[in-house]
Structure formats: C-alpha cells, structure tokens
Image (cartoon, rainbow, N blue to C red):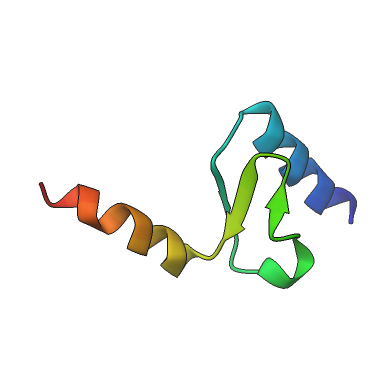
Amino acid sequence: MLLINMFLECADAARADYLISGNQRHFPAFWKGTKIISPSEFLSIIAPHLFR
C-alpha cells in the first residue's frame, strides 16, 4: 500500500490529469484532481491528437 500511496502523492504533487496503471484495482478511480486510467483508456484519449 505504501508504494501505491507514493504514486498517488507524486501525481498530486505534479498536478497530473491522469495516472496510468495496468493495475487499476489497487487504485481509487480518482485521487484529488487525478483520474486513474488504464493504458488503453489513455490511448483512446490521446489518439485523436496524434494524427493532426
């Protein structure tokens, strides 16, 4: 649990919009202003911006 907290606190300190994890069951859906998403969710978010 300590390692997960470290990632959450780092995302918070960086004011990250997203924390990408392939292991979402150990993370909450949101942490303060950060949404925890899977790699495939992240790709679906950024894909439209890659091919301009």
